[in-house]
Image (cartoon, rainbow, N blue to C red):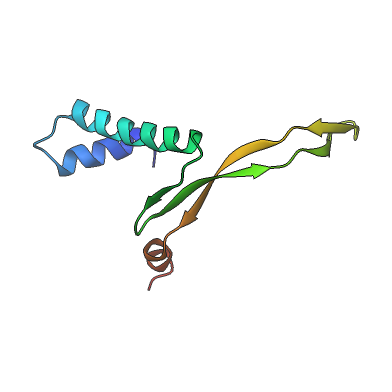
Length: 93
């Protein structure tokens, strides 16, 4: 599912809302999650899962074409851990 499909589904299920309002709501939610992660906060959506940021240390990697060693800087990456309700639903329980 892509963002536009999500917006369309929500708009279809809520005919009292205009599609542009639904789009604004969805975009605001995603922006708030992104901003919280950028600050280093954790975002938890009960029953769905939790977003957090993990730090990956710098390391020496290899250029796959030449095999030459390449220095890879440390970086922060988003991480998602599923909630129990989502895991149970995916596993048919």
